[in-house]
Length: 464
Ligand SMILES: *Cc1c(COP(=O)(O)O)cnc(C)c1O
Image (tube, rainbow, N blue to C red):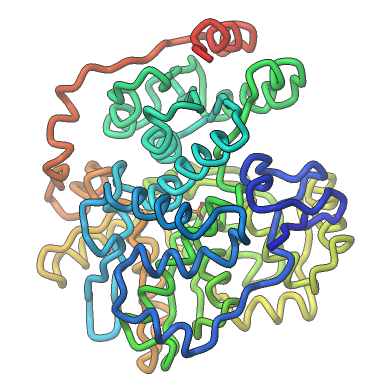
């Protein structure tokens, strides 16, 4: 399997090189040069198998011989051993035809663990093979940072520095990062906003000398290896509810479009999916583009589902590539317009094609609270977090009595206790294994929003 850039002006790479490079050098995103196909019998053979085994079969064609079967199998088994539910992504029934898939049973209580736990181990493997070390630097408003830290903690060949805006993350989110006790984990609280953190990160990537000096690497969601492991749970959920012999639909709380794109990947592999419902909060650029073709940037509005507060959904470029018959010149044209004019229009056959598979719904803040309250009331006290609630409401609007609907529960309700308590009047407790989160000592350096100060700190703390 080779990987090609959506913009067509970067070299094709192997799986391992894509893993280390992340973003293509022409600014594009790497995608497989062709989608691997499974037959209905291939899918049927996976029914009832443990999650790790399904994961192995689904990921194997994408890895394309870069890892042996033994190596891939070990990465996957290790990655999911730490989850606190044997099924990894269990289904819970909300009503006769509506299910929730709980993706928050990993170490940091959000779905990002499902891919990040694989990514950390893939890094380890490839770096050992090449006898290299890297320094991962990331900026986070919450969930990505803790998932990345958990994935990399204690690993030999990677050191990780995560910047978060000082005093602006939730306490659970901060403690999940700062209480990790491992010598290769470093937290930096920047005296500024999330945007300041992101700008510092961009400046580091643009400083070629610094970049080479520390062997800088990133962990943001455009890395193909973060999308790939997410295709697996679309397969396990469909198989549980009768696939591939009947289609199912999914509603996905969406920010950067990585998670829902993984559903599209499963579909390209041959899994019968009726609809993929893009669920957005009031930051609704994706709902607008599906409704009218208008993909114009707006301003980011803060909401109670902060992991979906985005302006540009980076992974949408991967879909645009397919919608335009994989013509990189078309993608370059749209991306140029986005950069220069702040938007583009999706039109004609491309928009029609998108609508064959995707639906989109915008769910505002009061509808989100109502949904948390309603689910708690109607489903035996079941609690959903605000991101999941956006998905549940979008699913309700798109319901089709003939097709099972599965909403992806992307975070544990205890990760966003204030919104849940406000809506349902109940404060969700942390799972047992994290009950001492508030007692663990924190390790974190507070630094000014200053490039020289932050890079000097990273240089002085690196051990490699
Ligand atoms: C990251 C995140 C999302 C958005 O996922 P994308 O892949 O960026 O679309 C939704 N919910 C939660 C809880 C998240 O952490």
